[in-house]
Amino acid sequence: MLDTDSRLRMSVELCPEPADLALLEAKVAEAAVAAAGVDGEEELAVFIRHPDGTVAAGLCGTLVGGCLDLQAMWVDGSLRGRGLARELFTYAETEAGRRGCRTVTLLAYDVCTGRMFERMGYHAAGVIETAFAGTAVRWYCKELAGSPAPGVRADEHHRGEASEAGRPDHD
Image 1 (cartoon, rainbow, N blue to C red):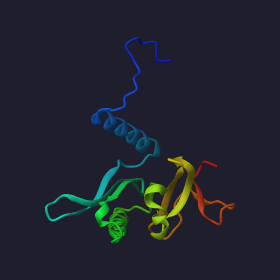
Image 2 (cartoon, one colour):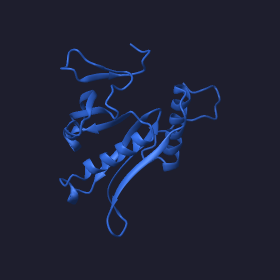
Image 3 (cartoon, rainbow, N blue to C red):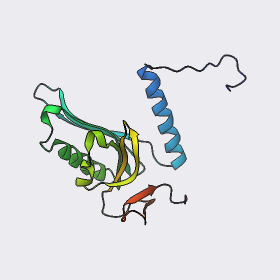
């Protein structure tokens, strides 16, 4: 039930305004940064462009609290299979390390990427087997400095793969 203030109303919006979505993302990020007690977040993007300046491939994410959280990666279909995704990740990981990040995280859909991220040194920290069109959604992480990421533990039931990531004080 909504607050007793009768001026509030709830709506389901199938085509929300981009500014409203940006507001939600900014408020969630602001709350997470405040709760974690870390400096504010920074955006990071790496692009591969055609000679005319249009985007041929790219990735973007957020740097916060020693982690690069990648949110999107795309390579034009006609350019796939040439190692461009690997190049994007190499640049992003290098820049994240330069900015003090120890860990990179991302969410990926098997239907789009298969197990590409494992081949690039990422480890599945969590998986939902039938989430997206009946295929798996995986949350990946990679330690940049060669040391285990804070809060990541190996699951003793799954061949040493990380299966849980959380706050160090959460068991």
